[in-house]
Amino acid sequence: MEKPGHIFGRDWEWEALREFATGTQAEVAFGVVSGRRRQGKTFLLRSLAEALGGFFFEATEGTDVELLRLFGMALARHTGSPVGYPFADWRDALTFFFSLPRERPMPLVIDEFPYLMKANPAIPSLLKQEIDLRGRTHGGSSNARVLICGSALSVMGKVLAGQAPLRGRARLELLVQSLPYREAADFWEVSDPRLAVMLHAIVGGTPAYRDEFVAGDRPASPEDFDAWVARTVLNRRTSLFREGRYLLAEEPAIRDTALYHSVLAAVAEGNNTWGGIASHIGHKSSDIAHPLNVLEDCGLLVKEKDAFRTGRTRYRIAEPLITFYQAIMRPEWTDLSLGLAEEVWGRSRQRFLSKVIGPHFENLCREYALRYGRHHFGEGGIGEVVAGTVADPHDKAQIDVDIAVLGVPYPGEPREIKSLGEAKWDKVMDLRHLGRLRRARDLLAAKGYETANTVLACYSGAGFDDALRAEARQNPDVVLVDVPMLYGQG
Image 1: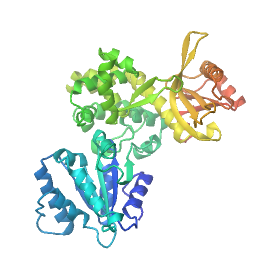
Image 2: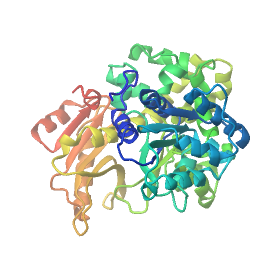
Image 3: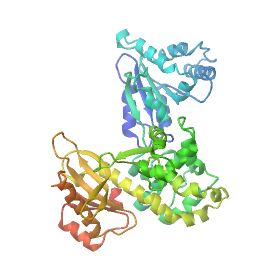
Image 4: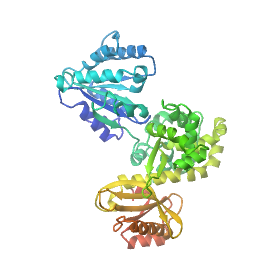
């Protein structure tokens, strides 16, 4: 079964779903699909059900009795019954649900599963019992390929964790993430790489924003970017205008939204350590442990360890639109609500360059190194690509390494550093930037890291001066990555 033509990208996700749904094993199979909102999970699963003649049910917020009735009505439509099935309870409903596939495997999809769990916490246990009754040990009496899906990551993360009833039952665990940045540029039909970076710094790789939120309006050129921001993102009449606030409000684990907004604002301002966040919002470090953990569980914050400082971690916001909202929109909300989009953007553009696109460019460069730039770093696998801080005792300073590509860690062997990189969006890079990387390499070598084949990489959105280009031509361990190369055009 080929992927339907109306689905952009998502090749490996579709293949994973197809293999699961059409598997020939003569027993029930259970899978879990999750991911942040607006990534196209429902679109994928509905398309799968339509392609294979399966059943699709999207739950809503409601009472247990109401949801059971809606489930019965959806099953009736699927089977062609003129009236809804009056199930006595969920056990009765699930028994019928699992009996639908008879002659062939069939996908049975329950979307927004957290709403069902909220209305009836016993549903995971009932599902587990039905799966076990039809499993291999009981003769494999069902061809059902049951998929549950949800956007509340804090809830979905617990479905298969610890002592949860469904733990150990899933044959598929699929996390639908944002489109990789190159695919996102193709999806928005933006060929200019510099414009693609600026666009991605706001909307990221979230597919829904293009058609559902801005009705296909995209910047026609780099010169149109400012006007596009004013007429879409900052326009109080568009759906995208309040999206940065709604993404937080939609998470069921978040109660005191003011505190969570403050934490996200601190990170958007560049305070990316635990202590820095606490200091910025005026709280003790111990007081922000819970909101940080909740934001991580919800997939809104990502915690990354420092490459070279044990015990130090950094936080970054996972959704670019939230960074843009916190850094640009939230401080100007009063004027934006009055419709002063062009005026606000005029005085916020410089802030966008420093607080939003600069850090975002660094993250794109790390993604480039991980996904597309492996040919720069020689043979062998990559263990991780993160930022790091190297202490320089002689100068009593620290060297920030924006892109540290580390080799696979092997016990008892020195950790290989495949590459050290620095990224600048709006500065022409020169030999001073390369000099800092060389100094960092020497310091790390003295600490016992393997640096014999370390590549020194400069990533720039503004270009490189002649001296640095000459150095790169003469030394194979120096790599220059510009924006066209970032998008596979170099």
